[in-house]
Image 1: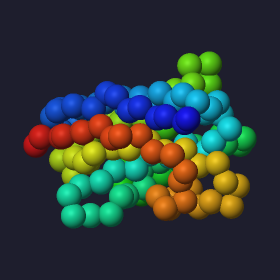
Image 2: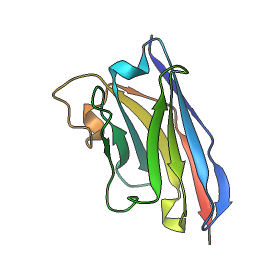
Image 3: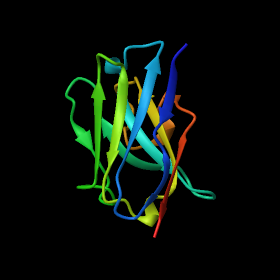
Length: 125
């Protein structure tokens, strides 16, 4: 049974930083491409970051490039999303996910196999 559990969300002010964690169990996280997505009410889940298995290459949309950093500690089987210079528009529920299929598109939420329960991030202006 694969489980992903996010933590680290909270209420911060614009310009502050947060680090989200994603603890994996039931599988070595290194076997999967790890992704972070976010969602606000009434909107589809939005791609935020991904770390490709094997190569370790990272991917970000323009909206977070230079501010967010995805990483993973294989010894702890835990992934992270470091978020700096937070903006009110970053407010959302953040989810981590694991993608095992080599043919999956890492920016597409529908292609991910496992999801965490989400953690709320609120950025006040």
